[in-house]
Structures are given as C-alpha cells and as structure tokens.
Image (cartoon, rainbow, N blue to C red; front, side, top):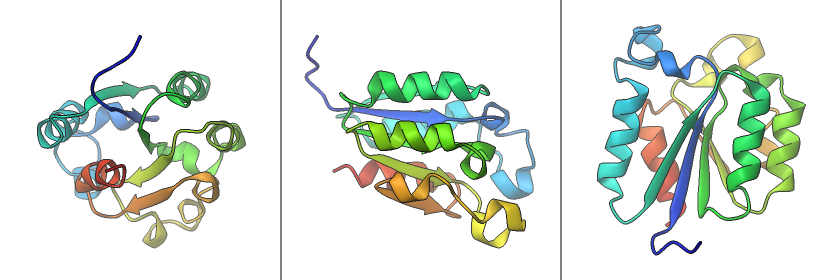
Length: 142
C-alpha cells in the first residue's frame, strides 16, 4: 500500500499515557492526546501515527513495524531510556531514523537518568524543551 503523504510515527513508552496528570511540575499539564493533536496541526502534510505502550516488547514491535517504511520515528522511551538494550538493538536494526525525545532535561535529574542507552543509535535527541520537543523532532525529518 503506498501513501501519498510522508508518515511520521510518534512512539511513547511507559507512563507517558499519564501526561497531563503526572508530575505536572516536571512534565506539564498537556495530555498525550493534546500533544499529538498539536503535532498533527503543525504538520498537516504528514500522516502522524501515534502509539503508546507501557510494555517494552510492544514498543519493539511498533518500531519494527514502522522502522523500514516511515519517514521518521519520534521516540520518547520514558524510563526504558536508561535500561533497555533490546530497544537500542531494534533502533540499530532499522533503516528509519529515530529521534529520541524527553520532555524533561534528563541531564539535570537523578544520576541514573543521565545515561541514554539509545542515544548512540538515534539520529538525534531533544531533551528539556517540554512538549515542544515532539515538534522539534518532527522538524528534523523535513
């Protein structure tokens, strides 16, 4: 099936379904649905596909599904950033570029959050710019 518009996939990991209610001082008050709607509004010429899971294997499946056909993947892996060799391996295995996004600045938080196992295999990363990071990541595919 061919698409007439470029596809950008936004994948969100564990606990990001709680945005808007979770630790508002760190993550703000926008829901994940509102963030995705904002991105779609700003990029009407793209098909924006959104996926969220709290389960590592399901995130891997989503990356494999879109990792050879999408223009780009915007990925907020949540806590898996610091622990998942399996997510690192799937990003390294695909041809679609991945931009890692974090709403908060992981570099000025707890020590264990400062290392991203995924960063070395991603096209780039956006940290600490709040929900604007999603838009910035999509812009990187233009």
